[in-house]
Amino acid sequence: MAQLQAKAVAKSVVALTALSASVFFTALLTTPAAQAQTPASCPSLGDYYPTIFFAQQGLPGGDAEAEPTRAAWQQLAQELRALQDSCLRSSEYYALLGAAEMNRGATDSAAEALERALLLDPNNGAAQIDYASVLFALGQLFPALQLNDQLLGREDLPTELRESLVSRGQNWRGATKQHRLVADVSAGYDNNLNGAPNVELLTLTLSGEPVQLALNEDFQQQAGGYSTLKLTSSHQTRTDEGRHGWEHEARGRVSQDTQSDLLQFSSQYSTVRASRRRTVQWDAGATTLFFGGSALYTASQTRLRVQNTSSKRCAPVFDLATQYQRFHSQPALDAWESRTTAGLNCVTALRSGTALRYGFDAGYIYSKALSANRPGADRDGVQASARFQRALLRGELFMQASVTHLNDDKGYSALLANGEARWQRRNQALIRHRTPFALGSKTAQFTITAFLQRQSSNIALFDTKDASLEFGFSVPI
Image 1 (spheres, one colour):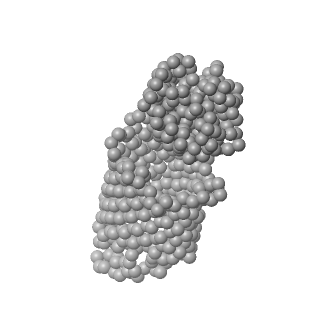
Image 2 (cartoon, helix red, strand yellow):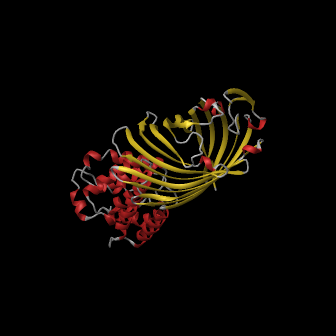
Image 3 (cartoon, rainbow, N blue to C red):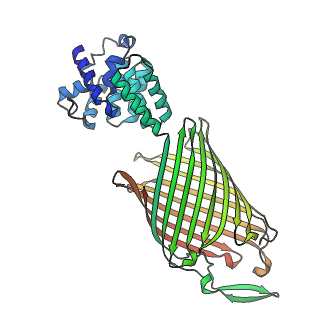
């Protein structure tokens, strides 16, 4: 039996490229102390080493020419689980079981078995190798790197295995920096491309008398098709405490109404720090928007978002944001706007094995006029929203609805509504479905988006309706 184990060890050095055959090194890396702990009732495990087991069962993986299939690993896992009651104190047994579970794709079961192996023997090298791989698969990059570095510090590590561990450590460190360039191409129809009011006649107040003014056709709602191109470049760096990075975006929309064509540039830096108690995210950036070929406004903003960690279904989240708004052709509209929001982010496991994510939040908005000539002066109000997200039809469905109510501090204009202070109530609904699909070696997405907006006001100039339907593709470059 010792000769068979030695043969399996030699063959596994070649097969380690997939980083899933590290359990073959159990004979080299399992300490004598752990072997002494194995009770007599636990059978000899030599026949359950993968290469030997696959060869005896006539399964792929019994020789160097064939890779084990997932079904082969499944069969090995079933055979090993039948021995569990007899091998409860065998670190070698749980290392073998963890490797089988890992290679059949049962990552959570593999983590449980390998943790048990390391509890019985913290120096079980085979279990350490596979447990690092499982941690990486579970998204725990830095614990995986730390364990891989500990393995490289072992003096009993075979040369071939050391080279493989050095290589995978380099690959994993490469995952700490991610750069993505994504192109979004879409086309759709909008019944209000120019955001015009939902009226053809505007009532003015002149010398105390109402006067009907017909809006020029250029200021009435323009409906039609449009196409959009968006390029997004992001660079993220992950650390053991969180992540940080930049995101840059350029977006353009063209339609038959050239006066409503859009061009937008934005850049944002964000940093996220996570702990056992909470996740803290801070963003800062700037946005410039061109409308109809002319610069409309530039805004610079910053936001702080804190989400508490909770073992319950819902976790509280708090958001504080402020934005400076500069209107290039109408400086009287310049303002500072601040928003404070509190809400809940919730996750519920469904019977299908997927997760239902939903949330609610409500907040207070205050807009401070930076010019004494700003119509309506200061403005404040409240906003509430709800969101819903779940897997559906091989993709993901996202829905969001919001209600915003704003009030001006002073009368908007003596020419409108007898100089009354303006109020606005805006209702919005967004429905989006994304379906991923393979595009060569990359994963792209097909998107359908429907958007509805209804804004009402005591001043007809701000009474608007907007509905759009859009189809698009998101392609990584």
